[in-house]
Length: 125
Image (cartoon, rainbow, N blue to C red; front, side, top):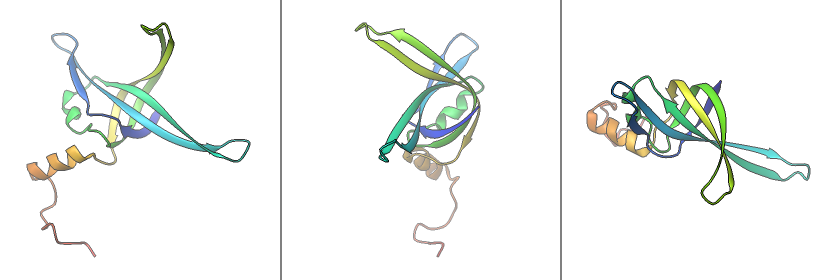
């Protein structure tokens, strides 16, 4: 399954065992449709994502980044401490493709010298 959405907050790296780390992050997908009355309805779906292959990817998974993810989805349900029923969607990510970057990533690219070497006032038009 593929999903495209925006990272909701900077990714977190967790050590699960001595040899395994996981990168956890959340992605929001916005959708809209018209109901029977013809009114536009906005809907946002959140996925709690896990990436097990490399922790290095956490550097690019910053708030606001547009990403395309490949993986598998699963649903979970639980009862909260307030005894209210809760539900969530998990996405076990096997592949990440970056389509856009958040502010932190843009800053990191500029300071590492990976951005283009044109002066700031050099406009392409």
